[in-house]
Length: 301
Length: 301
Image (tube, each protein chain N blue to C red):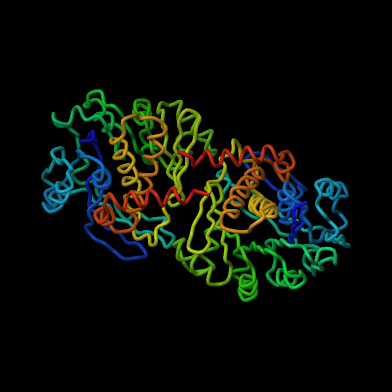
């Protein structure tokens, strides 16, 4: 059995509209997208919170995929809800509302059985909560972090503390500029490495992603899907594919991280092919391997 | 000696401001950027027009690079001039003015000595002029076309006639959407291939570029430069590197086109490293080969 991975993040309902339709009460949240993607490789342990309205069927669906939900607290109140509308180009979106609900008072507690999880992914939530979780996990083998412009703008001090402690940060190119005040990729990466992480992944959406390590760069294009239905959760699915694959590797080095980047790109592409977690549910390991090969073919002369 | 390539396009003065400085009266225009990039591989024949203010030193500089300027008409009046300001992110720019000047009445005449040029690049000018040129060249071996949103919006009928006649079109992703009314890459490519070209290059700026042929895709990332100074002309430099390399190939097939895409990306990256044609002037074939290898290294596990 591969090493397991722990994810702390949101568990949510999304009300989403894209050029391809509308979906209300869609299962979402960073912890859900991440764990569904990682579940193709290993056992994922969720730490999160949901309200009494969170359906038993969703928990069953997660458990059927060997996702460990013992760290998912169900409390009185409503589950986190996000509503948004994507523009025709699918890159821009308008957030209609963000109702934190039970997430507002979330104090993550890592169950005892989770404390020795070797791989840790700190999903995109308040940096202070990410720090809490880091403190509760005993000597993780590999830690990774996602964040967003909101935390860069509002809680930079806490965020910098987390950044200093992790092995990997995954952000997009505009977040890199915001965080480092650099518009050049190489300059931004140099500054960000100095803040702590040995590894950096720069997500460029439908274009591709960079991996940076020790003055070396690796790039994979995104998989050009036949139809992008809903990009919500693509970044978390990417992270889940990345970390999930990494748990299967004997060595964590630049070479295994390069492959992890391609698996990240692969799982991210399944997310956008359906609403909610539909794309991640419908794929399997054979299809994942075949899409991984297609991504390599895309850059082969 | 390799086969030569003919370019029809603008010859211009640019007044450019970027976050890295200002340059007035900078040598520019699609024919200039293209020929300077292609000159690293073969003889390039320019067809264009300039005014009496066009400096003899610029013509000398082009000639020293084995660029054939017999098709560059010098007439009474002022040379085409473009002025623009780039934003901090270097992707967005505001055009301050476009003075067509002598370009307004340009009627391209292909010199007799040019009529049998095997490779033809129709730079980004009015489609009716591109058609004129196509008619004047005898059985070219390979023809390629650049265009822009202006011609898609204003002279679509003429543009479609040119598109139907060329082997390759190079455009960016937003132009592909505008031209095909598709926001998905694969769907857009399918429609565009049906309009005529066997080969399509989709330029994605600092991210990279796709080559599409016969339901197959190839991708190369852009070279991540240490400092992007001025993106003006990068697309034309890309086309020059692409077509220049192609003239050195025995066979024009998907494999040689893939390599041409990487040379395109390479030459485009030199353009952005300096104002005007500075980056293209300062590089040489050894440096080009070394950057080509770096681009391959970037996608090698």
